Length: 391
Image 1 (cartoon, rainbow, N blue to C red):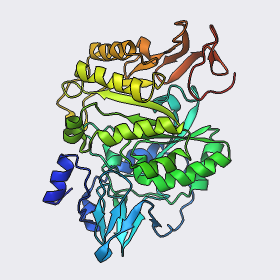
Image 2: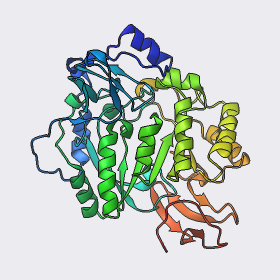
Image 3: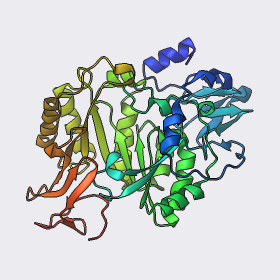
Image 4: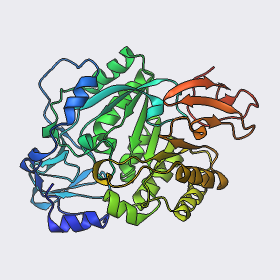
């Protein structure tokens, strides 16, 4: 994807200052075209094809001189000329009006176990109707869904699906939640908010899986509408965010603290990449920050890395590295620390921090046993924080 020199420097430095985003519609026509072959094969029954409404006006921007606009959705603050797009590729300036090109345009819809997100303290054992649009506002070298994140609206042969239709599909699937996932929900926030508001009126919860790269005003609006947010904390190191993800750490930490203060349920995932973000000292520093700023009850998932995308040269994360990270965070006072992508690992289970009994047993994404009653340990009565179904 061609960038101007100034934009390249700003992106490489994780600079939060606005930059000039000069992408045009033609710029994106050469993006990855394979995105929907796999998605279409596993998608739920598609809605009837209908003519798309004109692109919806985006929220969170300001108008500038010369028909330019400044996007205020994420810390990049893209300044977009008429006919151009922001770095995410899905928000376009049309005559001085910023419009979202992905509203109502999911590129993938699946029914997943909620443990896959992973949410371990939200309605365990249930399914989540999961959806994504194309686009992302980071560029992680290890991205597992790069076919979605790095694609553009022109690459995806989508069908217009209004918010009510998404909710109807969740009802039909008996899914108690809708998950906004795979790509980056921040870039389709207007669609998320409208689906979530309609879902709430039907008694269906909304959960968001995000990189947390978002400004405070749109984040607070999101928190008023959804029930749980999982943030991928890429590293506790700004240089890693800059060099590996094309962003910066401080806005993500602010997002995490804001979500916790809002009362929305929060879980964190840390993908441990060998040699890049596995420094034990940094992980201990992160653990202390979590305890001090969001408390000991926020579940923290350490996930095993496998070679993919632009980091195919690295080995999988040694399980011993994950074990050390797990133990360091438990020692720092975090009460619920998990290890993911390691089938059969003892840290896949939820352990009561009071009596030490296993209260949720997992095998992969499958729940084998839940020893809880009304949000408390069945053995000792300790309250376990989360969003639970009544016994």
